[in-house]
Image (cartoon, rainbow, N blue to C red):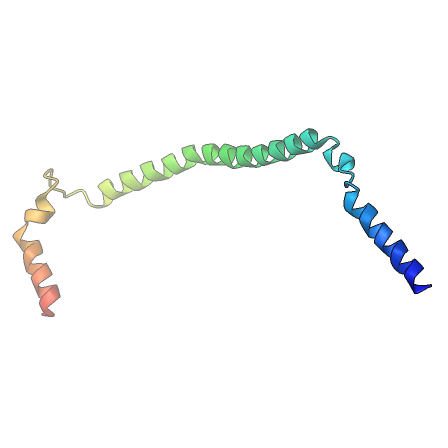
Length: 101
């Protein structure tokens, strides 16, 4: 009795080894699902792109306001761009700061 069950089990294993899995349901409409996922990701990226371009004018206005404010609050400036690097007063302040004085 045990031999019959073993033989039946061996036969089932042998058939299972030669049987190929049915992938038809997985392959069905694969391209459609893939394109839907790609379209969804593209829409997510388009949303971020749209918001970033919508914020550009507001950020430009902010930069202009900060620029105008910096020129009106501190109107005494040198026209020389390197004046801060060549000023002897800055050297004195840096030396005092580094020396702890």
